[in-house]
Structures are given as C-alpha cells and as structure tokens.
Image (tube, rainbow, N blue to C red; front, side, top):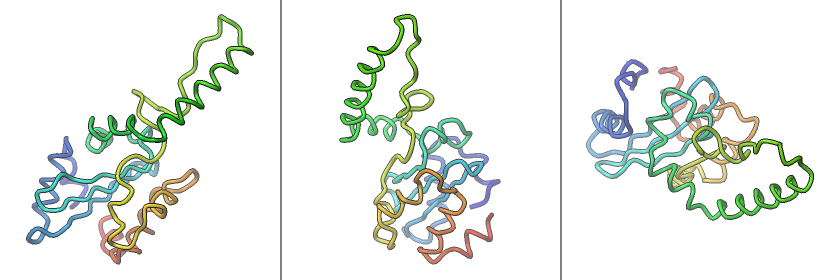
Length: 172
C-alpha cells in the first residue's frame, strides 16, 4: 500500500478493506503506520476476521490524522478494562490524596499523566501479541514502544524480524 492509497482511508474498516484487496488469497496482511516519528501502529488483517491493532502511543496517535483510523471506540474502551487500570486508579487516588494534603484549595486539578487527549491512555495500546506467531514477542513489541524509542527505528526492527525490511524501505 502506498501513502496515496491511505489518504482515502477514513476508518479501520476502510483500512481493512484496502489490506484485503492487497492480500493474496486470504493471507495475513500487516499494515505499518508511522506518523511524524511520534508513534506507530501495526494493523493485522487475517482474511475476513476483525483487524487486530497495536499502537505504540495511543495519546500521540489521538493527536494525529491517522489516529481516528486505529483508535477505535472498541480499542480505547477496552483500555479501560485493563488490569492495570485499577492499579493506575489506585496510584492516582494515592497521589491525589497526598497532593490534597499539600495543595491549596484553590489549585486547579491537573489531567492525570496516565491519559492524554480525550482520556486516551498514554503509551502502548492494543494487541501486543499480534506478531508473536511471526517471531516478535509481545515483550519485544512493548520494548520497541517504550519511552525514548523512535517509531521509525522500531518499525525497521519489526520489519527486519519479520523478513520484510526491504519492502518497508521501498515504501518509505
């Protein structure tokens, strides 16, 4: 797929349809999206199944033009069901109670550092296992999404591990 073809994509369904058109038979198609070297996404389309999505930084994606495509309501809503959400809430509550003891009553409440625009979580979001059967473990994918990681370098490493680095470089 080219950047030109992606310009007509407005929804995840549009992207999945475009991927299916590019597929040979019902083969798996992987779509790599990198935006302004701030975040990346991998979308996996297996035949007619629902696409699987991994986003390296959901909050950064929410601020970009392709964010609407990959940050579906289902994906962002599922983030609120995470086992880490309870831990994040507990940490936030503890921090808030400590801050309340130290802060003036007139001080404005700040946005939680765990969420970005519209309550979208900061950091990785989605199915980190989507490349595991191709040799890229969830831990490796999450490590490539960590703080200080460059999305372009991360995608290059992923493509190299998948044996498609030349294809990625050809479309960049």
